[in-house]
Image 1 (tube, rainbow, N blue to C red):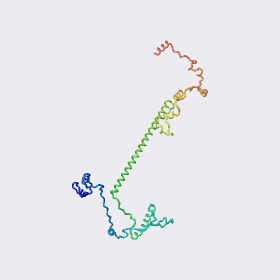
Image 2: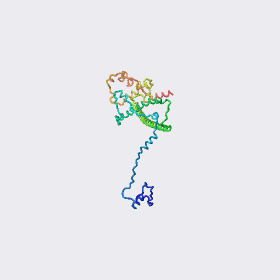
Image 3: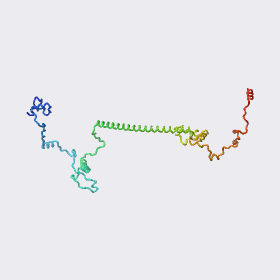
Image 4: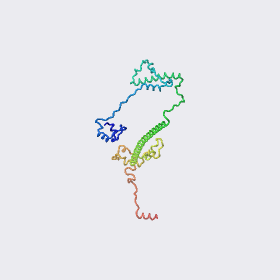
Length: 312
């Protein structure tokens, strides 16, 4: 029994309409048990397609839609390329056929197309003028858009969205740069404050040690803002004269923190300096050193009692 009989068998549940359907495994086992399947590959071979070449029918169809229209309606031209003006001016113009054009050379091929279009224009314009057909667009001419307004609106919206996205990204980038710059400025300000604080503390220590008597560091930024030609305060004028007597005495006694040993030794200048010599005081002649003077004797007890009674 052939496969057609197996397909029409009611036990298999197949019909001739289901020839293209694939059989299940159970159906194949039943067909193999009944001997309907032969060993080997069971592949459906496609039938060869018959080619049809009806020349007369094609010519008839061509005659049906072919129309004999005037040239104005067709505007077709078949011509050779125009002469190369540059080569003609340079004297290098040579007769070149279509067969001589190398199709693989892009420049040569495109120049051939350009010159052929140029020749078509040179031939078509006089014919159009002879037929009194305008070739220039009038000033008040409005051509119909190739795309509808709705499509152009969609394109415009997309362009606006892209532009806004670019602006947002630029703003975010600028904000990031500003934050970086702000952090940098903040760090510089903190470093400047620390530097000013350190300088002020060193100035205070110098003032406490007596190394300077200027109090300009208390003015802060006000003192820095003053110009050189501005009038100085009275305090600054007094400081300009020099340290006071107390400061000088302390400086002479304690020094400036440098070498102290041998500070009271005589030098050549101090030995020759006799400006502080006083003859009245020298050699114990003054009152301070016990010269001829009345002793300061305290009165006796009776005398003091009498003086007390008199005061009463």
